[in-house]
Image (cartoon, rainbow, N blue to C red):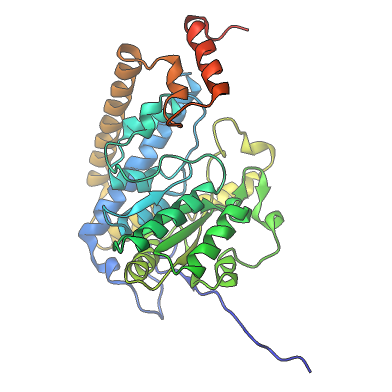
Length: 366
């Protein structure tokens, strides 16, 4: 007769409902009563969305290259940054601006990066975070390596990597889980499940009920949270980061949200995604939800909202102006694309670099 040798479950957490009211029948995190902190996090969410809108406009007018929008991910991303200490290390993919802004990355850096300027990767703050990582899920192993270094050096620091639902199918993500489990690393892996891996819906990516259970398969504590609920996201991240810092090992969090925009500006999601689905997702979006809660608590009103929107537009325009000034008055040479990866350039890239230098003033012609 067969017997069960192991059984597992994945817990799901939501504290703030889409209408901005708290969920009943469970313990609500203290953050829900810290209205001052919630207001500051809300302001950053609005700033991130304002920046996102401006960046898309700049791409559409040819001022930057392809851009990956973070529309709809604001709660998940900002929660990651809010739970980390300055000395921790973030390994992002390519759209986690909210987490990066919280940690000190400048808006101008993001524009430089998507404008093709290598200096956009050279963050003044935080110096020890990884740059953007477009190859899918490879940042998970970067974070695992950093976590291993922290452990060997006996540093009380934590490495955090963010990956999408599609990225969680990559071997890099699963290998990071295995490393975190085998060596009990101070590592937090965050799956921001926005339901779409470019044009592939979550339902066709695999048949697993959750993505968090991939962490359980590797022996890691793993939970699922409402990724549009800032309170739940911050609570989960603080729980995981604190455990990792105390030497309790790695953790996996799946944040359920929705990609409200295109995958990137090179994509047109209308070709493969039902309009009704997107319209329904807007009812659950994170900014409206937190704003409703703050208004209900007497911590926010229309006047403050209007003033914040004005401020955000000014901050974003200042960043855009700084970006324009840099690329027009202090442009990088075309050879910069070769100069920041290798200590000693391989011979084939030496040849390519020389060729690029020879035709530096002839770009755009074939």
